[in-house]
Image (cartoon, rainbow, N blue to C red; front, side):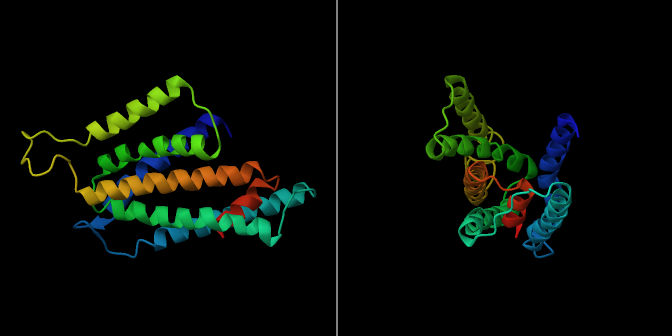
Length: 200
């Protein structure tokens, strides 16, 4: 597979999530239990990773699969964080519109960079820090409304609960991502096996 195909597919999937989730609402409410959507997505990813692991084990008999509890239990933490994050995303979209949701999604980059620096001791260049500051300022200022637009009761374009859930979502996503990268970098197991543990 070419990297540009994967990048395009990821872009389409990521940008369509908020739109499709909002379209599934009726009068701002979900007519289904939205916790089932992340659950079914995880089941699908588990089945796909299991199939790919099975194929890898057939092709390469030296596929590394660690089944010791002290190794497997480490994947419980990011799994729970992702579980909460996936459900917070649905809750966020009940308070904010799709464009606000997509703009606030950029905060994941900011929180990930900060956590990379704090926990993985990754150094960022001055240019990268400047880009992070500009992204933060841009995200924040895009949500401030002018008094001429409607009423001046609130300076934000959406309810504060939506912004709080958006920031929580960004923090959870970054924390889970950084922790998962930490686990996967120090582990020599098959990537598919690591994904199976995460999705389970």
